[in-house]
Length: 145
Image (tube, rainbow, N blue to C red):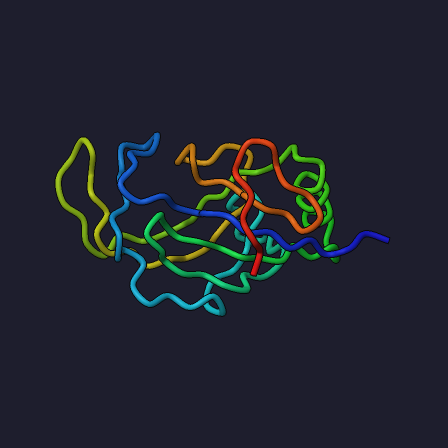
């Protein structure tokens, strides 16, 4: 039987221009709480695949610890990709509260709507760094705790 998979990584990296021409600044996520943010598969609103256990800004970006549930087909697919090392992208959905400039646009205050495991993140360094029982080869190891 498939089991839940716990992971840690960054859904956003501060001060790095993404493929859409935006740059997230430290403090943009305010005091967001993990319980308010769903974990989705590829940004699909109907594809809740687990839960965010911990969510916080640190000096690098928006750090996420989540658990992918094996109860849905999408969750099993995401869990298998994580365990195989074939999936390591993280991303987030948001509404802009405050921004300035263009090229790049600086995102200063955001309403975080969701965090997603994705194949192709907008920020190249927004990645899963640790999967319980497995360390992806692309990123340095860190603890899930």
